[in-house]
Length: 176
Image (cartoon, rainbow, N blue to C red; front, side):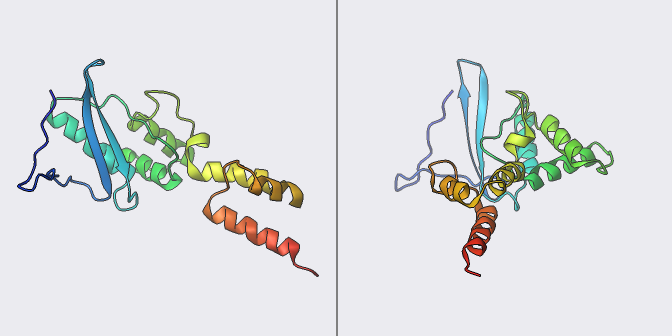
């Protein structure tokens, strides 16, 4: 069943604010599979953490007599988001959050069903782990290889790392 858009007197679509700040979401029913899907963009992850967004989606589905069967992250996620989620779900289960980062990430992945649709490899999906891998690769390069890499069409190193690398490059080029 598709709901018709509700319009105001000027013909503009009326949008009802959701329950979470810094979140944009839309849902639809996929008749072919007999499921509903919710696509969520978190624009302020510190203000509205990943686990709170997941929990709200879970509770909204529950109120409608539905269940969340899994979730998927598109792109990369900050490490802090995964650690906070792990702590949240352990606390919710009345368990100690005094575990390793690896275990916190595992709890977050399992609790939010991030591995239901496919494997979730933290080394590939967490921003800091990707930057670590990129940093090691760039740091191991000589000056010519580094300059060639940063001038190429390959993805450029991100933010802080790139600034540090530029500072390192600048130091190497300063005449003694």
